[in-house]
Image (tube, rainbow, N blue to C red):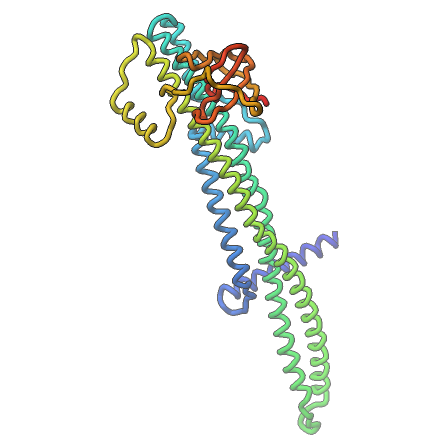
Length: 386
């Protein structure tokens, strides 16, 4: 119990000393140990990295999950260390509604059959969105959160410790200066030759004793100053290494940013392919409506900017294409696909086919073979196995 009381008293005294030193610095009454310019730049850079990483992380979360209620739910599950339950995406839910409505209206009616086609497309869009959200959370959000909750907390902790040791160092310097000044004053008084007729000899003895006591106090203050300087230098080196690691953090976040852009580009590319396919299927129907001028202009703009349209007729003659000696892969079909023309290959879900790329062909398509059949197949309908 006595040990705890002593430790508590020591901690309270240290806290009071730091508070006095900090207040004196703010009032400009005491000196403050300044860090070098390089160190200050490192701390400014670290603070800037933390602030912007936090903003980017929060806005990315909003982008991936615009629903505030869903974000709060995910936050609570995360804090409770429980797995977030799987949630149906809006596209998948819309697809289910469209297909249920088609069954009610009659799947053989023009409206019902069109709802089935569009519902399948919406479900594929929802599945692509789910994959995009999952990939983005792993490759982009998780590294940012790990930095904010891990590395940055460690850096902040070491910086607070460094600031406390700096206050201790400045307080030790102040005590050493006071002790030196008192020792010098006592030494001057002890060097005065006493006049035994006017001054009591006892005063001279007291001056000599005071000089000896202040010499001991100076030695003690000097020892405390050396210890404080050593601890400060050691902590400054540790903190400096942590601050310099921000450069490697930037490189790691740069890699994660590339992965996020790749996932986003893949997602939008898949959405474009799915919508072009359903548009093509609806356009082949006898009850199809002509495209409005706005959609036609948008399609023309995409084509002129280099976006390949799957509706365009490919001049490549599939029957003349030969499989390469190396580079063929097997793939599993994810969804049923009806060939739009003789150059394409009909697909059934879960079947295994052989695919390969052909120079000059759109990157959204591969040449597929199953048995004696050969034709173009969309990449988004496949899962490459080898």
